[in-house]
Length: 142
Image 1: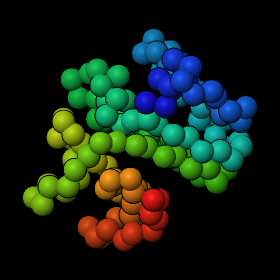
Image 2: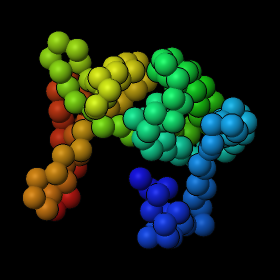
Image 3: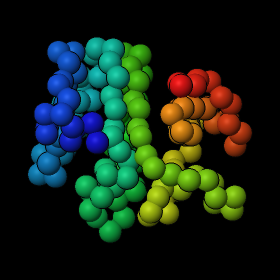
Image 4: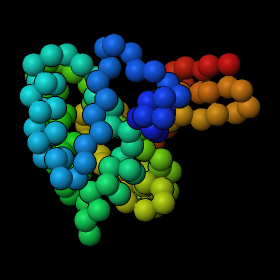
């Protein structure tokens, strides 16, 4: 969504932000260039959103390829103490755990993955960290 706001000029891009909007034809080159950059200089990479990335890949089973790209980015980010943040629209199902909406694909589980839950209630935004299936409130914006 953020990139859409930038492209439509509803939001201006700060000088220290680089917006990368790959096309399917140059995705491998873009990922390769990005992995080099994040391994050399501390930065934050935001993949907005996992749901859109899976749709973008458009294969019959894009999950495996998306997971590979994400793990490649994450492992290179460790070299420079960078962070990879991936947003998604998901919900928790008791029998299945966290799944993406509307596809029902499972959200990747890993000890290095931290999950945060954002919830709005009226004018307030609550950010909670999810640990062992429980929400631990860490921040409220009124």
